[in-house]
Length: 378
Image (cartoon, rainbow, N blue to C red; front, side, top):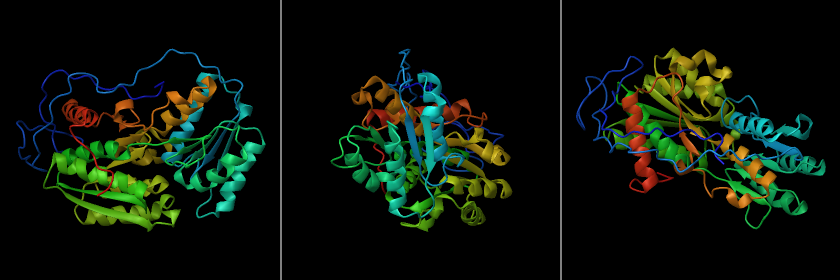
């Protein structure tokens, strides 16, 4: 069920290349031509002849009124304007659509650099209080779910961004972040006047490197000569990089001073600082996970947010709860990728014109068909 899926754009005609410019836009014609300002663009992909997603809406009525749903957030929790808020949106929609009673929902949040015992306690608390299903939002719950899952074999658990080997009652909710980030790289290349862009990662771990890798591949596919800055806020093991807007702002400011004029972040709540730096430094920014243009916590910077890479944690949470209500976990995809609208890009604010959207849909179609294989590491 793709109740929250982004509707793919059907394009049947050959469209002209989009400009590599800022909000005022512009155009260039031909393939692989130079803009007056910006990148020498590669030949555009073939136009997508039809919707490139296999996801389909469903009118199926699901009754979740008997469920008690527990959500264990990663650090930042509801209100982080990113990863956790996307999970919260999925829970909110499940509540509304499936008739889950407000008193049958419970949300708990992790603290930065907390001990593993805290996660164990959080999960056991939810399970002991009768919540079923329970969703751990973030790979950091993998170790604890490996312990708690077998302790409560009748509880259906899920983990976002992770898997627990041997725990048959823990469903992995995994994403092709590199595919969505590829499209973010294309957007950055087309909108950069300097042909110089930047990536800010929260923590230097394999998951965030998937965003980094996809972004670089997309930017280089669209503009082979593009220059790319990258900065991780904290090393592996120090997860404060996902909750430090000041560090995000400092890193982004450094990239702007080095010449980057479009920045993409995968840094959780630290992305608020990236947006602030872009606004102050007359740059543009691409959000992550949720449609950050529409989030109130970053509203003061929304005018610089040209798009967001949508990692549909909301879809995964919603679909998992629905699958539990139907007792049909086998209906869930193995990975939430472009083909099921598990990742994508936002168009809020009208900052991506039709020509650029045509290019994005062309690349999207090639990825879905396997004509472009996006690596998940550099």
